[in-house]
Image (cartoon, rainbow, N blue to C red; front, side):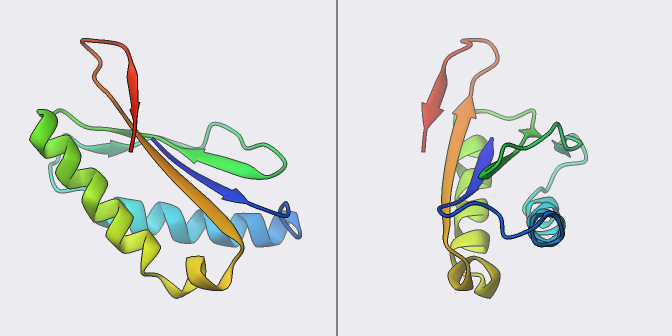
Length: 101
């Protein structure tokens, strides 16, 4: 899961939609396997939006996906220009407990 939050709230629904579209496109580019899926939008709060990726992988593969996401988003002009916080979590579906990354 990747959470993108605006520290000051979204300026408008249009700005939120533009960042959401860009982040979804960037996340899709971080997936390798045909089994990895970026799930559809499930809603957003006033200041943040959650993006869920479902991937069939082991711990090493999960860390690799997470690393690609961090590198892609943290180095992007869109994120650097905005006032955002980004958090990633990995969830082992067999264990059920999220790990903050």
